[in-house]
Image: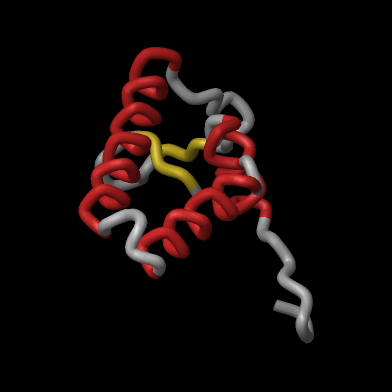
Length: 88
């Protein structure tokens, strides 16, 4: 942070870039906020919200497993101890 401004890091921007579009939609927060209001007003119960979030995440993970993530612009380094790739 710089004052009241949040400054993203290179790693943060790289992570954001590989996220599926649905995880980047600003209206997703608004939709979940609406669900919280429905719980508050007795229209929706918390278990239904939890189940819908679990289903959303499950679907997103399935899509990532199917399509993968574009990690081509992420720098990988070789670990000097074990020889496997790691991110710096």
